[in-house]
Amino acid sequence: MSERVLITGGAGFIGRRVTENLLRRGYRVRILDSFVEQVHGPRRTLPDALADVEAIPGDVRDEDALRKALAGIDSVLHLAAEVGVGQSMYAIERYVSANDLGTAALLERLAHKPVRRVVVASSMSVYGEGLYIDRDGNPVEDAERSNAVSLSWDPVDASGAPMIPAATPEWKRPNLASVYALTKFVQEQMTLTVTAAYGMEGVALRLFNVYGPGQALSNPYTGVLAIFASRLANGKPPLVFEDGRQRRDFVHVDDVAEAFALALEHPKAAGKIYNIGSGQDRSVLQVAEMLAAAMNKAEIAPEVSGKGRKGDVRHCFADTSKAEKELGFVARQDFTQGLAALAEWAAGQQAHDRIAEARSELEKRGLVA
Ligand code: UD1
Figure 1: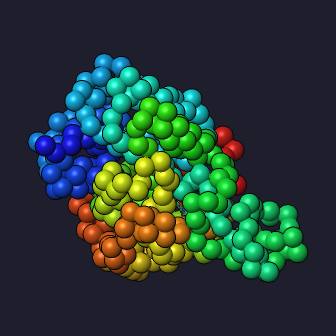
Figure 2 (figure 1 turned 45 degrees about the vertical axis):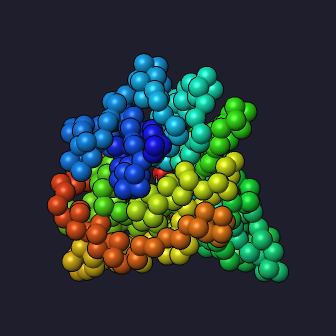
């Protein structure tokens, strides 16, 4: 008999792809999702492709909904969360409540009736700045940007020389620079602690910058590619912060879905934390140009603002060797093809550019540099 898996947040951008992946593998899937308007817009239903999946509308903090959702379940993938880093800095109670109390409610229920495995979606945001290498070739775990020391956007060493960014491994010390990062760290640690105490297997996936079709284009608090796609779809140039040379790891949502399946299945994963990225780093300026080309809007050049966003890290990209070695995870989606798929999807969407609105929310509160 195949396992019955509950996916919290299963109607979201990542959750939907995870659901599809598990269905293909023969799992029986149930979704618990609160269908929040900021993500789903006014149409609060599952897409047609998932019409046959059992979906319970509700929040993990709602006792009744949670009890119903967990009935007869063998394993849980916990993706339900508030996801905006900037927004977390003013909607503090909402973020801590949804992410940490939400996880607490789920785990407390599971303590009464344990399941085999709980996989939680964590985030690269727990690292703060990624790993750097100093002039002598030593790894630096606590790099920070100090505009007072240098005119460069890059973190510098004691002598003022910029350091070299390196792929960030799971062992790098966390540096929790936003309320969002704090809540994600609490989610992963709480999951690992409570599952271990009750004989369950906990796994945490630190997702890097996830992109792909289905990304909530009108939610101004999601990732940069959705924001750029929404700008371009409205004929506006992508607004690039800093000098555009900041580097990230953009991982396709289908690769992430595969990572969740492996994390659910692999015996070695129990009790572990894994980076999930593509293993390739790219600059924000480069991806702005590539996306414009993919959307047939190459004539719209990105606008490099030369201004930073408060709380942004300069570079962070994944060392994925642990996930590769232990889970057999390798990101397979080609970036250019992934952008083409995002572009095609975006073309069929009505993207309301709410970036200006979101920016003024942050500005009002002094949260933009
Ligand atoms: C953050 C979180 C990450 C979360 C993601 C999406 C951190 C370190 N990481 O990643 O966990 O999954 O948000 O919520 O907090 N940029 C522009 N123009 C824009 C928007 C962004 O140039 O209009 C730049 C940013 O300055 C940044 C890069 O693009 O350098 C990526 O930004 P974003 O997609 O928001 O994600 P992160 O900050 O990397």
